[in-house]
Amino acid sequence: MSSGDLMMLSVLLASATPTLDAIRQKEQLVPYQSGYLEQEKKKLPAVSHQSVLTLPKPPESHFLEEERAKLSIAPVAPLGIKEQQTKKVPERHIWQAMGFKAAGYANRHISELDQSRSFSDVYGSGYAPDVSFFYEFQPFSGSFGAIGIISSVGMTSFRGVGMLSAQLPRPDGGTFSSVTQTKFQFLSFPVIAALVVRWNWLHYLRPYVLAGPIALPYFEGRNDNVTRKCSQSLSFISGFCGISQGVIFGAGTAILLDVFSPTDAWGFFENNGIIHSYLTIDAVRMMARPSSQGVTFAVDAISIGFLFEY
Image (cartoon, rainbow, N blue to C red; front, side, top):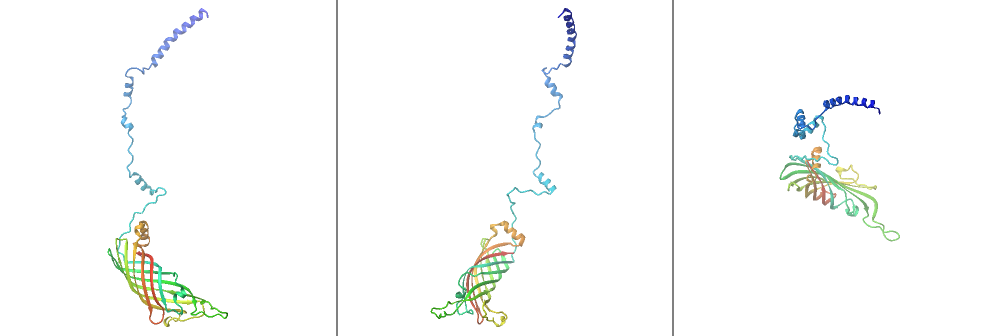
């Protein structure tokens, strides 16, 4: 480099130095100057640390219910959980009851049929369908129990085969069978009107007794051409029939079912007006005789059924 170039460079540096110093003085910041941070904080608006950290209060507990009511949206129960029914059947004065029952066991002595053989020979001693429906009016009822009048209509059905009174000899020796091809059916329709007294024990058990008269119409039919007219008042009926009269008395207990399922009890009341439901078990004895000729009945039976009070 020549001496002329060196001289030119020295002149340029001398002229640039004042400019750089002016820039430094203009843009110089003193971030580390004592008290600088305090001065800058004073320029900012005052802010409380407590107000920054404090969360807003949640809405009142009834806020969601009020908003849901405005939108008419019903609350949704969790899946798999059924809303429990807490309603209770109100206690009211009971005026009436009705129900039905079926005989589970019966010891029957029936005689004087249009047969020379006994009833058990023709119809056997097995189970026979025996059902009845009843209605009870309770003019007197209270915490002690109830006194009422019960009326009942039932039906009992038997099927059997004809039996010869004696075994006929066979030409080749021996005897013919006493069983014939004739089929028989015997139906009885007991009609009862009785006084019933019920006691209320501990609200769950209600023992009762009943007694009263019974009328027992009956009919026997057969599948052959042999016919016998009924009594003169029923001569229009083809078959053997009549009406026997007698008495019936018995005792039993009613077991309250409401306590086992209060939800079902409320449903029965709301839909059908049933105040109380009971399971009934009773034992009765029935005796009936015809006024002249006909059939005599002596029946001991144990029945199970249901009673509904209104």
